[in-house]
Image (cartoon, rainbow, N blue to C red; front, side):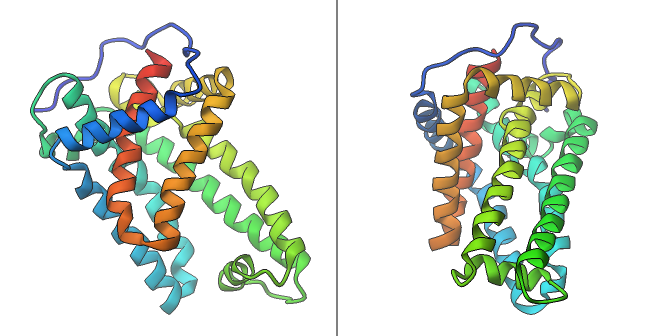
Length: 253
């Protein structure tokens, strides 16, 4: 049976923590992955399937790529809840319960669903902005998603890549600030979406260098998996998930 979330939201502000904290989170995340019998890899497998699906959709029906990616943004927070729940179970000394982790999102479903919708909206806006940038900096009259992705992966138009990367970094920073510890907080506490987002942004504001290092490590691990060996996500994705639970604990408790 799933355990109830905490009775009240803590009132203290986010903590200021050492710069080395992200490395400690990863070490604790690996310990959780091991001590929960690598159940987190089941969720990692879902991320692998998601990546393969996007790749297949782009190679066959690229017009559907944006819709599929939007669906994954909606699903992502719910999938991550399972990994966070496994860490919470280990922290409380209870045996790993896969069923409880699969249903953990139900404890605060409205807040988590609203947060997922916010992330999806950001993704859609960013995708449209990419098309506009493509249209402004490309000789083609009618930009497409396929054309944008092809141009991003090509070094033939350096001005497009630089502008796209600069604008993209703004969207990525915003998404990271909103989500760095929001979902674990909503899973663990009876809070609403805006309260979780506020605390996430406040945590980043109080620890900018720590969060910069954490973002770099996330991009390094997940980006390496995506670029070189997609099945590696089965390990790196749950590792980041377990570590994020400890980031939440360090920052907000």
